[in-house]
Image (cartoon, rainbow, N blue to C red; front, top):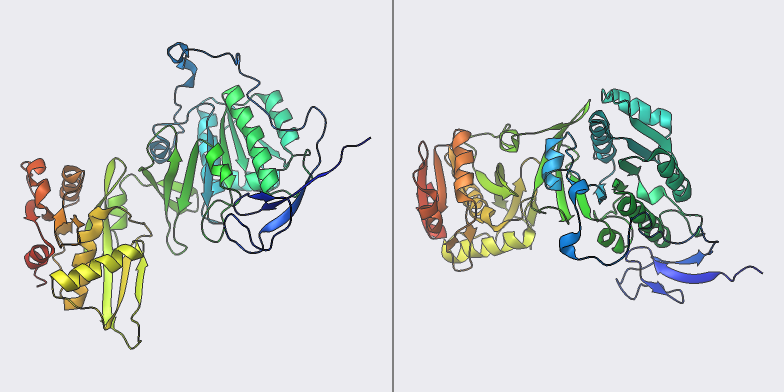
Length: 458
């Protein structure tokens, strides 16, 4: 006698399961995301896979656990290795997300090809293209690796069979939303399928010490499609970001069990694939127009390296009852705070003006050290006065109008000096850490008004 079907209702956004259908998910509050899922248990082959390939599951003293065979392996792409924390860790499960057409598959194919050239056996599983279509992409990239294996497959059971047969050191799955397990009757991409397939891949990766890459789709909000548990299960979550109108791509880690989440990798999309950008500052400032009001160079800090970017502001009279406040590449809430500080502490009023702030190049700046650059760009546009083109600015702005110190001040100034900047406006609290900076003038400021005064805006 066959077993009864296990019927449940699951939210396709957050993964919450309920015994009955709901129009609105009781966990995340989204409407129309709860669908029926029917689980059909199979025989001993079905169900989640554990770490069965490990030599022993007995408890061990941590000091006795060996890690010699888990040394990092360089992918051959320095910017990717930087974001990973120094290279690829055997047995790690890495999820790569990004908008459609941003270059996720291209990056994975390039990384797989470099690893295969280094002598590792790589299995590339494509669930969205035929082998012939993937070969066209392979030829366009100019790839020549011999030990890169390709299979078009969406069944996790058959993928496990291919892995057992080939025994690859690296597995690439493009994309995880296309996979399904025969143990469940729900459609590929559903919450149940994603959870089960990822658990099986996790068992493969850990049990065989096989580094595994998963390419993931994203929702219209930019988050990885599927339940949040998907991001909790993997070791690393990377996002490939970029604007449609720009060739620049930024690879950012939002979760990394083996490295920092503050690192970024810079790439440029070309006809032959993604090219590494070793000096992002020079790239982001390549099209800067000097002598333009509202344009200020900010010294940001991404992970272990400084990045100089252009912060643009436009302040213009508004004919609306409520003036617009638009921010691209910077936090809109932070912009509102800085506008209030400028009005209260510097006497610059924006109540009748539309305000637009943009970070050129498609980079998103989240650290408080760019506050002073945004303030300077707003004041420059408001006064219609061009700043000195050879000046860089950084510092955190407090609600009392004070300029607070930031980390990495010496590295920021050194990067500016290398690119030919002659002056740096820095927080006074960082002055004692800068030492003697040859070739660049250091201007230490303590308040917003003092900074704008030294730049000639008040």
